[in-house]
Length: 315
Image 1 (cartoon, helix red, strand yellow):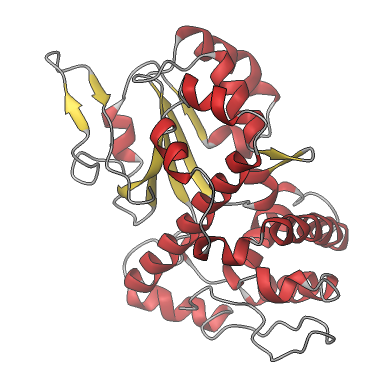
Image 2 (spheres, one colour):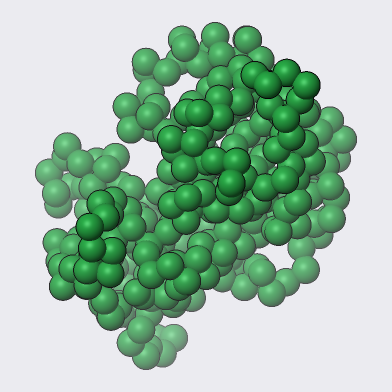
């Protein structure tokens, strides 16, 4: 299984164009090797290396960013695969293939400019301003893995203190990028351990501890944008498997019912907005009490479960 490390496998100097080499284990033959390891089990495409066709698309996409210096330092193999699967073969699947590839190249070039602006490839090696306050006032981070090996990423709505202190600050954006880069790193380690591709995670947004108000939702939306682009959707695409928004207030559930029909069906299917914690449905999705951490606490009523302050390995 490719480790998802630096994608510029061929040695290049600063003046030479970016060159990508196909990682060992990718392609149709590599997929069969992985399937053989899990004989008798149904393996979803997300877990498998790219097909020969996907490798060919990645090759064309990389040729489209070969002149971007940031490609040599900011790209990795799994990121390339996510852009192709998320944009070329998903969001723009109904377009002519060449048009979809062209659009993917455009969004990747924009993403590379963003990575370069924040030096994403080295951000985990740097001290980011107000990191302690960021995680103190906005609970978020990996709390375990589901039964399929996907990382479980818990988020509480940002506190009023964080909104007051971080609104309009670049520190907010940089600390979020740190979390995204750490999440990628954790996924790579899990992939190496399990021998599968695990670039998608499960998000749990709990509105039961800090109230999930419209003000907080709008802050989260605006905080995770950069020059009109969604940081998560445009710069870290195809990372989300499912988003469970639990203990959501009635107003939010009503708003979701009105808005959901207008969303992309693929996007809509990733979100579950509920007013409680539906453990049976979550268990079908791989989120059982066995793999949820100890912060899941049963209340006096067996029908109600709430999440309390989690242990967070990203803080």
